[in-house]
Picture 1 (cartoon, rainbow, N blue to C red):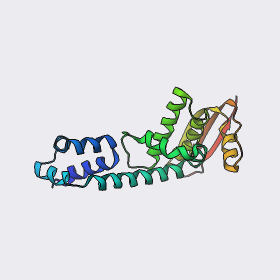
Picture 2 (cartoon, rainbow, N blue to C red):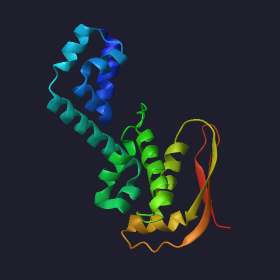
Picture 3 (spheres, one colour):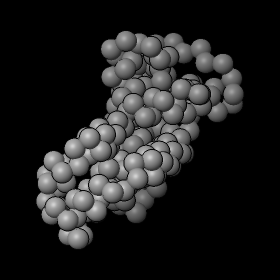
Length: 192
């Protein structure tokens, strides 16, 4: 088997619902796009679809768990809807090697969803971007970046952390995150 091509196809089959569906409908066409020989294609086509689906679902479950850990307050705010929204956010998206890419994908999805139809609490996208800022700031080296929020995300985060009801009021807030090389992270929120 051409190991690199086979691994690339398997990785995509486990993480891409649309490609997985397409592969089981037309394995030769999909495998040839990945450069597999007919022999390799026939071997892969013999894989049990249910096993592939079960493994793919377990991977998505693990990814959702990591996203919950990365965005704990957002997960708390979304409650039971978190997993369904997470699955929508990552559907068809290219997968990076990092878990924070899933948190970023969910954050971008929530931004679009709130802007488009406002079906979530309007502050949830701000909250996700606020939590994601700490992930972004966790990278090594010097850091300096700004974020703008439509809501006072600090009060929302505090209320969620305490288990209190959220009474969010639209109030433009700006955040800055900074760290010198090998220094301590500093951040602050400002309201104009």
